[in-house]
Image (cartoon, rainbow, N blue to C red):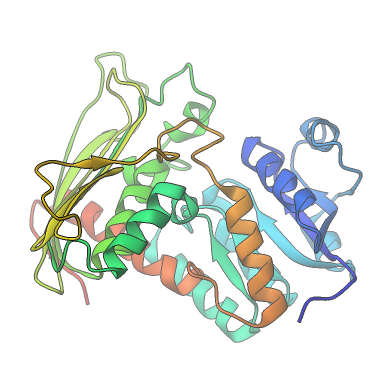
Length: 339
């Protein structure tokens, strides 16, 4: 049950996303940001000042984890050090909010998953679109049998992440960006699983970007998927193409279809076309489509009331497994079956 004493929060990292976490924790009455660990001695104080937050900046992660007032840790560090950080946090018995991607390979994902399970800690992974209003409405429509059994589902992440975009500094590197899916497109893969269920087999293809590309990997990819329930689907992740940010979710069923915020359903008698409802779309801008407040409010509620989050590390690991299977298919040129 809820306590009158706010839970202390520690933040790892001082980039853009750490600020969004801090703002969301500041708005939750059950949490207060107590500390930050960052490798950058300049940006840490600036980020706290920007968020109008007073907190201690720790010299090491171990020092922050020893603070008894901190019971939640938000991991906003680069993905190539997620495993190192999460293993330490789990050993310290803290609850964990982890930014995506979980890690750069499936072996590290499994190590982290086991460590968090063994620690008995609550966790949530930032596939934040699960808290996007359009996603929430789509989930309710599917539960209400608005389109019947799914026959086909696709999701697209199209976002030109070039030098004009801050993420490009690390996203372009194989060591930190990893791939088109790890860097960003994993949100689209998670959307397919969230709405369509578990994936049985994938076939992936990749392509280079612009002629002056700085990416160390093909920034554009597409994959065909077969789901365990018999549906088929497609996912694409395009990081280097001249387009505004676009995130598509199209779901076609036996009784109707959903195309983003447009619905054609047997529930609407006499409908001859799609009904469009106004909402916040998953590509409605960097702030409005990243519902960190909804994610963190859900996480805190689950901690206080002993519930599992809708995207704990074990659930998110299934999305990562699909991502790595697609990458394996791209590398081998062959379909890959999932267990």
